[in-house]
Length: 354
Image 1 (cartoon, rainbow, N blue to C red):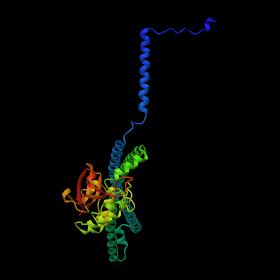
Image 2 (image 1 turned 90 degrees about the vertical axis):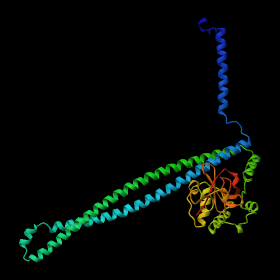
Image 3 (image 1 turned 45 degrees about the vertical axis):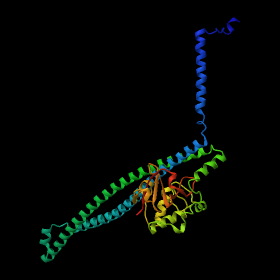
C-alpha cells in the first residue's frame, strides 16, 4: 500500500517560492500584453480616421498615376513589338522568295554548265552562237552574285530585327510587372481605406462625406448651384481650344471616379484632363507627372480657364482650372467629378497646354 502512495509535496523554500511567484506574474503580464497586441489597433477618433483615409486615398492616387504610366509604356512596347514582328514576317517572306529564286538559278546553271567552256567552243558548229551563249552565262553569274548578296543582306536585317524584337519583349515584360505591382498597391490602399471607413457609424460616415464635399460639389446639379459665378455659357478662356476643354469638363460633372479610367463614362484625375483637351484637339500625355511638362508652365497668378493645375509634391493630382479660384477634377473613389477650390490641396504648379 505504501508503494502506491503519492510522493509528499514539499513546500518551496522561501527564495524558491519568491522566484516562482515572480515568474508567474511576469508570465501573466506577458500573456496580457500579447493578448492586447493581438487586438485591432486602438480606436481612432472620426477626425483621425478621416485623416488616415484621406492619406490612403492620396497615396492610392499617386500609385494610380504610376500604374497609368506603366500601362502607357506597356501599350507602347506591345505596339512596337507587334510592328517589329509584322516587319520580320514580311522580311522572312521576301527572304524565302530570294532563296527560291537563287535555288532555281543555281539548278538551271548546274544543268547547263556540265561541259567545260573550251570544249563547248570546240564542239560548236557556230562560234558566234557560242560566244552569245557565253555572255548569257556570264550575265547569269553576275545575277547570281547579286542574288547571293541580297540574301546575305536580308539575313543580316532579319537578325537585327529579331534582336530588337527580343529587346522590346523584355521591355514589355518589365512594364507588365510594374503594372501588376502598382495595381496591387492601389487596390491594397483603397481596400484599407474602405475598411477604415466601415468603423464609422452611419452618422459619422455621412459627416465624413459631407466634409469631403465642402470643398466642392458632389454632383452636376450641385456644381451648377455652386458655380453661378462662372456661367457655363460665358467661360472666359484664352482661346477657343481652352474653352472647349472647359466645356467638356463641365459635361463630365457627376461622372464617377474610377482609377485608370479615361472616359467617357468614368475618369481618374489625369484621365479627365487628358479627355477634356483631347476634345479640344490637343493630345496630352497620360499621367500627371508628364502632363505638367506638356505645355507652357505658368505661375498661379497667371491662371486662366483651361489651364492644368497640379497638387502635392509628387505631382500626383491634376484638375482643370475654370476661373475664380475653382477647378473641375476627379477627386477619388466614391467622389464623382466635381467643382472644387484649388486651395483644397497643396498647390504644386500649373501648365497651359499648347
